[in-house]
Image (cartoon, rainbow, N blue to C red; front, side):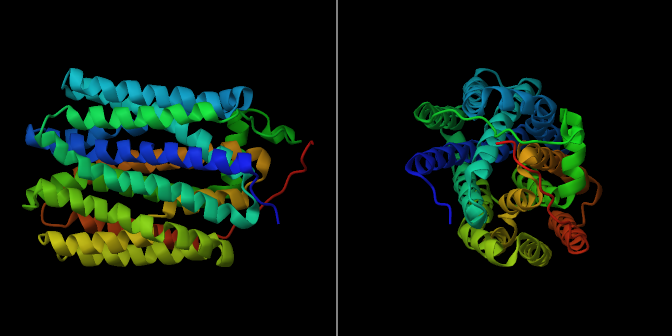
Length: 394
């Protein structure tokens, strides 16, 4: 069986480190700005709409990012994306404004997507099939650890409102410098039919082959954005303190961290589809149960941890599932579309979540999350696509 070379192993762990710091900045940014705006009296709907800036940026850059990756390689895209994120984070303390912070979040969305798209595609391209689930699980684990730690730094806002942004930007800078120790590579060239020539044709072909694999990233995007941008607003209105809220959000992410690698290895053995159906269904039951205990910070924290164990791996499992179904010539497109699906879920999360808690004041926000997970589990259950193969040129 194919194993990692020393160079590939070094590259893998550098990419994993970069992604973990990116996860930290995202995990901190969403609840931090939501808490600041809620304390300033900004409405839940406007708060949710502001959070969508991150994901609008992702969607804006998506149609244009694949050709530069194929032309210049992975490393330059990671460098540019990281630089955009670092600069944007440093600018947050300069001026507090809903409009200005929306623009900065949009730029962070562009930078983060460039970074994640390149690292995901790079890892899936050099990972052997029998270790794909494991490697993507470690990738997701690194992001999850960073994302779990992020909310804990929201408390720094009590010292100085700009301090969390400064800390995050410095950590991102340190991780970004590691990319200089990696040699650049480009995606492999494969023989393809005219149906795969051109970005939009590749989008269509990839969607037709692997559409079901884009459901888990959509699901994770919805969960990440709604739980970190809208749930804080809902929780504060239910007398949950900011300190407790930080631990509740961290508990969900830590649940995903604990189960990420075991679920990745399990998916290598029994298949991604079976694991996804089961985990989404159990996640729906857990969030439905949590809706009955929403005023108890301890109980909610425990149930969020359990829910995280079930659904915190949906993004990495989705990427692995996509790689199972997609021929290598379409791997960059498949990774890009996973990012797009994640962004669509992330966009809908804050907007629908904010709208939900305004229109249905007597219904728990967690009911919305449970219904979504249950529905997506059923869709994957009734879909079972097969992989298509293409002959390599070299």
